[in-house]
Image (cartoon, rainbow, N blue to C red; front, side):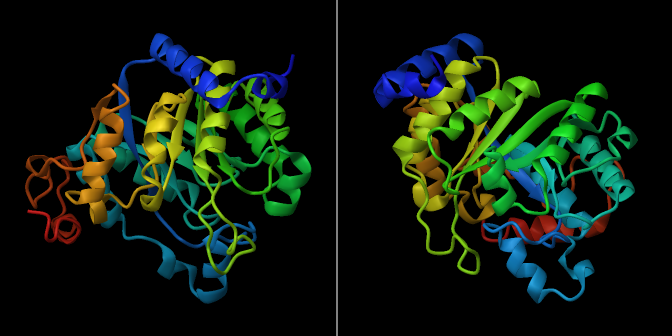
Length: 333
């Protein structure tokens, strides 16, 4: 019986209960807060039909202006480390930074976090250039139905992403994929997803729900329902007990958090960290996790962990980092 028939023959609540028991058996009781570290908001491809970078490409004449200052990136990493957050991955649009630049940034992140970073910087053939500063490679699959993928991500062939993941495995890196729910996929496409995870021996899957951007094809679309989202996540957890699952939701959908954790999520992501830290939204996030019976690693509310306005982690302290730390922590004390 394929996974679709299993879904049709079970109520969502039954799937969630089963997924929750599998998660507790195979994983720790800890839920992590994950931060996607965006280092540029420009992409040379710029034609994925859901992505805000497509609109940004039309507006930005000089891609250099879309690159974040490295000191600002390191300040964010340091603050995430203080608050117990994980760096979900280092993310950039195509051709925003060179391989050498990404490697150097990753090395500096390693100095702060003392562990390797995941990469999500597009289809790369230069993976052999990376070392211990990188723990894994993320392929932005988005949707695994081949025909739908061609239409939604015309310049990111699924075959090229798959080949990169194969190369990553050969080089000893972990493999992850991102999937966005709400792009027109059907329930049957879950079969594509399970086959893909098996074929490429995926270690980690990151789910997002569609966040409609006005200037894109999906600008008037609605995000998928929480029940559908939990249905997909619990199905993947049941089929892959050991896989790491990260789920993204948005500030207007905080009620998704509890059901997604019970469905199999090990971590949650897609929050504007400093905008909601210490606010009612941060408190609500922690409450959602608390009532699942899980233990939260990291904090959205503990101001004591904000620490000094000076760098505490970077051994090659640069006074320019302090400027970004101060800006991030403005009005948080």
